[in-house]
Amino acid sequence: MIKSLTIASLALAVTLSTVSVSSADEKSHRLDDAWTSALLGQEPVLSPQQFAKLNNLAFQAAAVRVCEGFELDQNKFTAALDEATTPAKEDLAPETLDARQAFILIEFGTRYGLFLAEGEAKDESFCKNAKELKGKTDIPNVWE
Amino acid sequence: MSRLLARTASLLSLAGIVAATVVATPASARDHGRVGAAIGGALIGGAIVSALSPRKVIVDRNVYVPVAPAPPPPTDSFTPSAGVICYTSQRACYTMGGGYNPQWTWSVFAR
Image (tube, rainbow over all chains, first blue to last red; front, side, top):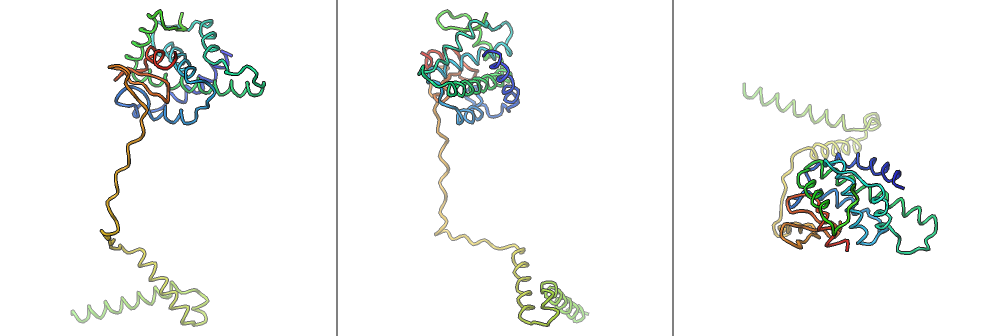
């Protein structure tokens, strides 16, 4: 699962990392236009809370690439990803589960790529926020 | 001298009309001397010339009222605290003027 996620994410990230940063909202370093486009095609395979958790996981994975001093803990990452993507219903058909997993791969990869692009474009605040998260004990992270 | 120039100009104009008519006339019309086809061809030629000519645009102010500016794009952002901006559609928060903020994302959307 992790290996396939990584491969798919990297492929998407390479594409998305080339997105111009000129569309960044002045209010933040968010790539507004790219996020708008990405979210238009989002499949509702997760709950709103799970999408937020997926955002945090994708951010932490991107921080490993963008910022110094971060490494993923594979066990933590796997457990957090499973928790963030647990289906609401347990009796889904195998083919439905396969399709769902494919959609989650795409959703994670899209977020990972966009965070890579945002972080690489302006890493100071990006990495500062990552370091602050690492120092928190009340909010989970998946770094070593 | 001026009469000569005027006459030459008239001849050139006439030659132009004849040439335009011949060019615009279908071969079959030229072959058979059909006047209707020749005139039709000339009219088509004139229409083409007319279409290529700059045209004065007439704007009736009683019909063309000023168009209202497009409304701003919908935004789903909000500020839960000073220095933080969150986006509902993305389920994510950012530091105002900065990057993604995982702590606020967790507090606002993931709990």
